Length: 513
Image (cartoon, one colour):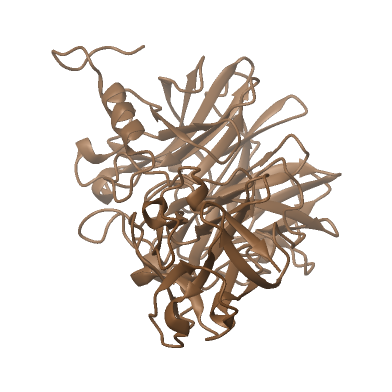
């Protein structure tokens, strides 16, 4: 599909696609390839979906039902490090495959890094608007927005050069963060970078702007605009705050709406978005929680059941703060959450913060609570051995081992199961009151399962996944691995550990009240 760049006849895009494919399911891979954590659940997924560097995601669904998402790549210590718009594809919004880069070579109109892509299918072509930022922040070069097109979503995209830059319009600030909308047959381009978000009409070929059509829609608090229509309103999703300070980032999503495409837009407090000139001053529609920080700069899509979804980036404080060496780039990972609508206003992630676990798109009931197992007290019995999960010797000590054993009537074999607002479960021993956890928050196969006092860490949270046969998986929310009886033993006192899901009966459990 592309020309060769070496004597072996394998080009740069192909090499990186091979590396990306090899990284799926692997932890701690290089920034250039990224990684996906496999989710054994057919009903739920876990955030983040891809990382450690997939910033500013944009998304579009092809006619065959496949979703395609594209992102900035901030690893650019040298030219070889930087991916020229990484691409992922998915049949279901949950399981993602790395497809390569959008460009064979760097756009030539500016020696710059490619940021904040925006993808659409328009007039029979895939159109990719992108920001080109001077590498090494070279002040002698002027950032701007370019356009590239392709017949296929995986590229390679043909660059058509710069269409808008700072000297081309009357406004302050840098010309980056494009977002394209075709409205009533007229193509429009939005952009902005904390100097206001602006809009201009494009020519029919999308390769130039129409003079005299510039306008401003919101104030200088925002960047990373997303504009879409729903139920008679146009919505503006904008990012505000500091995007790139690692775990100290203050990024969040604020929202305005209007009955008219070009505004005026107002937030849910009735404040004109044109008057919002201070970071994080308006109502927050997606912000921090205890684990995930700095959510923002995303895009919207709709699943087959009519549910709305937001793809965006955020930091996972239980993961890396930076994706590479020397404190750069910031580890902004790829997230997905449903958008619920309350009185015409969006609530993202059910409570306005990123979720750790969510029901898969298409299954419904995303924020209704409930789960595969009702809250209560249970014996948790292994399907292979018929033996109960218990704390060894009835210990009440932190760190005491968890194993399987025949029924003794001891409350050390009984467990309180309580669902969290995120959909995960706390499982606490009736005898000791301590939490079932994976020791030392390990993500390795064979790591020990034990009890411990409450630490608030996700290694003490569990996804309970219905296997559809009366048994369930106990999947650790931190590692994504299943509680497992070692060596498939059927003996009393056999150890319980975590292991990658392999569908064996020794990884299946029954909840008996």
